Length: 278
Length: 283
Image 1 (cartoon, rainbow over the protein chains, first blue to last red):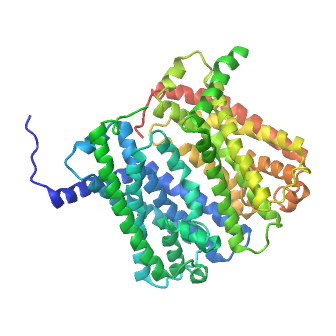
Image 2 (cartoon, rainbow over the protein chains, first blue to last red; image 1 turned 90 degrees about the vertical axis):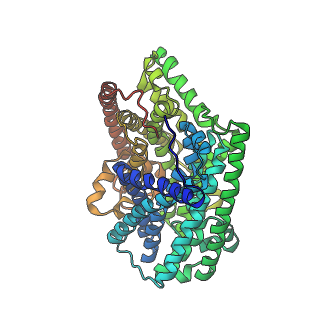
Image 3 (cartoon, rainbow over the protein chains, first blue to last red; image 1 turned 30 degrees about the horizontal axis):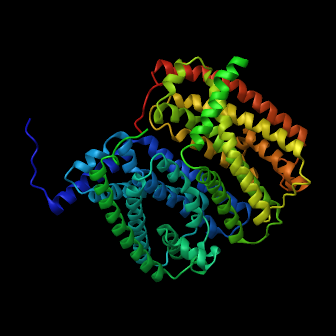
């Protein structure tokens, strides 16, 4: 049998890999109707719970909006952790990781494709939660600056998925713990990133440490830009948060590249990293 | 009976404990057990404080805190049964061996639920202690009605285990993405049982769902046992006395017990017929 030959190398191969990996992520997730339902339905139920808590304690209506926005953003965190950070671990468990390592494609391109595809599919789900929440609970949005809002969202996603790529390589070094670590990081991250309340409540030092998670600054900036009371409850000014998110984006993507290279070296040298051990 | 206990219940409880705990060292395991529930309750504490109108003395504060703390059992025992089935079928791929072993599967599931109850209890106890010590939750352990507390806890956990068997058996018959079932039911119970807000806050057409759930009465009894008269500050179930709440919870537990028997028989037959006992959804 003749091997398939391709002239694609360098950036052409990188881009083709990226598209090839993004495609199944978008199409695959759209085909799984149960995923669509549950990934929208479950965060929405939790969001409703938090909305009713705010109603029970007679909070201002903007807080209801905070809860709805937080609920929508959980979709991104879940996507990053379960379908980005854990992905190479799943591939290892299924016996595909060795193929990934042996293939001439860049692993970075595979992860980037996964991120772009995941981001697209998750954005649709987050939008559904947002629209449904806004409609059911009459959330009062007052967008101050669309350009800044777009910049904040784009940078938050870049930094978040960069973090996911970094975790993807780190998780490979774990065994069964990867499963537990994804779970362990759920509620603490919801808490530290202030998914359902203004992160300013932490005080400056704790909020600053929590800002290492991209969603902390991203959500704080978005709250300031879409709610009337947002600026008074913001942690830092929006321009500073945009600058910080830019730095986080670069830092996480560079760190992801370094760790991926290290992991590939380990996989080739030791030959055990890609083994399914159960 | 004794043979069933020896062959099915005890090994299942021990296996459950091992699965839950032996993936790491004891310190990491303990951290894992407390980090999620404490973070979860901290979200509510900070939400409450961000609005900051009434302070910790308000009855709603203790209501939210305790409801969220005891809800840990719902995730651990009820949703846990579904995850136990999936762990055995898909992750460790041992369910088919369990099925041909001379054990009683519902009793085995019950044993796994007990293991999850033990691990869940670590989270509940730490969350309660943290509430009293650091977050001004007005629970006076010396004045608590402990007989009422333990009786309600036992009955509620038994009911959760029955619900877990129903969900676990249902999970066996699902091929595509069965992981969501446990989470979905737990999320629905969280919303409708008034775990973190009185169910009168729900739209009127949704409130009957809350009144049909045993967890609504269970959480109310636990709150009354720990808080005393302060727990009855909300009109939701104020008209019911403790014995009445017990009777309702007992009745619903009996209903779910019967449902668990029939549901297991039905879903077990469906799973066998469809060849789902050793199915792998390639998660």
